[in-house]
Amino acid sequence: MCFSTISKNVINIVSYAVIILLIAGFSSLFQKPILYDFVKDIAYFTKPIIALIAGYLLAKKIRDFSSFLRTFIYVVSLLSVLHIFKIFLSVDFSNASVAEIRAIGGISNLSEVIALTIIFASFRIQFLDVFKNRLLKKVVLGIIFFSFFLYFSRTMFVSLGLFLLAIFGYLKITSKGLKYGFLALIIFSLFYVYLYSSNFEREKPGLESFLYKLKIAPSEIFTPIRTVDPNNHAYLWDHWRAYEATLAIDQINTPITFFIGKGLGALVDLKFKVYLGDSEMRYIPIIHNGYVLVFFKTGIIGFFIYLLFLVNMYLFAYVEISSEKSKIINNLISGFGVYFFFSSLIISGIYNNEDFYMFFVGALLFFRNENKINLIEE
Image (cartoon, rainbow, N blue to C red; front, side, top):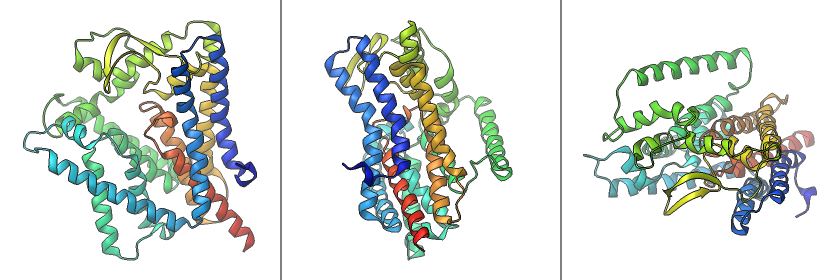
């Protein structure tokens, strides 16, 4: 691949992920990783790099932003229909819990978040509107939103709010941005006052178990947990993210690992075996907290490079440009930066295997650059 065909913005963003990968590779020289785990980590840490470049090159082949969005939204709407049918054909709603619905239908589909953001925003931003028929637009919106709701995903609900704020420029530190941010904070705080004042049960059918998961979300992420009873499954899963993150931090116990981490192939010792997916495991290569994951593999140096990567993406919203199209695309890229700040706490950030967002960022970087070129030509 010829790097002259890739914009400087892509190379700039990719360089952060490449440096993190190189640090992880270097630090693994001081450890003795198993070859399988080493190769597996290479795949984890190269995935966002490959995804971003692939998104950029595909967008370059398509070239038309409206065609790209239209194809994306129709594909997402088809997946949403399949998701809805799968749930209604398999779930007994008379006594089904949220956990059972998610076990059948899946735990999330982040593509729906972006599709909903674009459709909602298109009511105010004309060039985002890919539908000629208003009725079709409302039908597609209804289908995707219904499927979105049936995932009962905390991450998806928060992400949709973040992207809607981002696309309209309200995540920028301006008087208007601060006003909307403060309003969102008040609503969020009042909602959690309600949650903490209510007694929800974990295994109750319907929405109650979902509200229970929302209630425990902060402690699930931030409360340090070093010892758990492996037989108490409810407590274990309610504090799993905090538990694995705490153990990973505790296992960085030498000066060299503090600065450059344990490298590719390093595994977090959970202290006991637990079923994750289809396998019983004690040592795991990836944890939910992306910040701690990067710190564990690359130390404090890699951790700060990761933060710089996120800040760099967020700052796209502050680029001064006259074109509305480029401004909206910059806002979206900035929104992805804020989203990764959030998702790095709960689903590994850019290193989440199921996250296609770096691919979408790559596409946006092309269309942003292409629009600037068109403006210059005009």
